[in-house]
Amino acid sequence: MKNNKKNKSGKVNLNGTILITGGSGYIGSHTIIEMLENTSFDVVSIDNQSNSSTKTYKRIEKITGRKVVNYSIDLCDKEKTEKVFKKHKFVGIIHFAAFKMVGESVEQPLKYYRNNILSLINILELANKYGVPNFIFSSSCSVYGNVAKLPVNESTPIGNAESPYAHTKQIGEKIISDFCAVNKNINAIALRYFNPVGAHLSGLNGEDPINKPNNLVPIITATAAGKLPKLTIHGNDYPTRDGTCIRDYIHVSDIGDAHILALEFLLNKKNKQNYCVYNLGSGNGVSVLEIIKAFEKVAGMKLNYGFGERRAGDVVSIYSDSAKALKDFGWKPKLSIEEMMTSAWKWEQNKNKS
Ligand code: UD1
Image 1 (cartoon, rainbow, N blue to C red):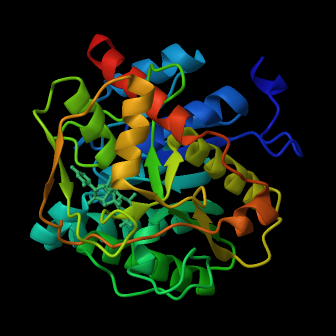
Image 2 (cartoon, protein in one colour):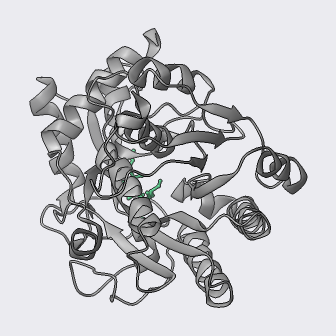
C-alpha cells in the first residue's frame, strides 16, 4: 500500500527517509501526519521533549496507521545526534526544533540564542558530513520586523528583529545562506510561516505544549474550556482598524502540506538556486479581536476577555503575499478561518482524552 501512495506534487514517486527535528511539536507533528497520509516517505524524528510529549507519536499512529521512529535527544548534543545519522540514511531534513515564545525570548535571550543557533549549526554540520542533500528550515514572518508596506513578499527587506526569537530566525537564515554558498551539493529552503493555528481536522491532534500555552489561539480555546480564567488582549492602542495587532493566521495542516511540496520541489531538482526563501501565509490580515469573534461564532459562546498592556516583542501588523510558493511548488492554503477555529476547539475538547 505504501508504495502506491501518490506524492503531493503528483510528479515523481519519491521514497526515502526524512529526518524531522521537533517531530512531536505542533507544526512538526502536523507535517508528519500530512507526510505519512499522502506520501511514501518514512519519517524519523528527533525531539528533546522539552515542550511536547512522546504521546504525540501515538496520536500520529492512530490518525495515519503508520509508525514514526523517534529519538528523544537534544540537538545541542552533537555526539548523540550523530548516532542517529550513523543509523539512518536520510534524503532530506526538515528542521522544526526550536524555542518559539516571543515574550520568553525577550526575558531569556541567551536561552534562545544557544538553543536555536547551536542546534541549527549541529544539524547542518551533520547534514554535510553524512551527505544529506535537502534541507528545509522553519523560519518565521518575524524576520521582517515592523514593515512599512503590506503585504510582505520575499523581496521585502529583512527588518529590525523585534525579539531575540525573531533574531534567531534571521541569523538561522543567514547561516543557511552562507553555508549553501560554499556547499553547492546541499539544497535548502527557508519557509517563513506567518501564524500557524488550528488542529488536524479529525480533532485528534493539535497544539499540546508542556509549558503554559503562549500563542493566541490555544489561549482562546483554553479560556473557553475554563482552563484559564480570562484572555488578556495585549494592547488595544495600536494603529490598526480596531486597535489590536494584525496577523496572518494559517491552518497548521496547510503549513504541513507546504513542507512536503517544498521537499518534493527540491527532490525533483526544480530549484534554480540552492538556497531560497518562501512566505507561507493566507494573505489575509486579521486582528486579535476578529479572531476572537470568529472563535465565538463557531463555538457559539462568549469568551471572557479584557484588554491589557502591549506585549514586548510584538509587531503591529503583518500579512503575507505567498505567490512565490504557489508559482514554484503549487502551494496554496485550503482551509478557512472557520476551519482553523473549529478544529482548534475540537482539539481542545478532545485533548485530555488522548
Ligand atoms: C510570532 C511570529 C510567528 C511565530 C510565532 C511563534 C510574528 C509576527 N509572528 O507569532 O511567525 O510562528 O511567534 O510563537 O512575530 N495575543 C494576545 N493575548 C494573548 C496571546 C497573544 O493578545 O494571550 C496577541 C499577540 O499580542 C499577537 C497575536 O495575539 O498580537 C498573536 O500572538 P501569538 O499567537 O503569540 O503569535 P505571534 O507572536 O504573532
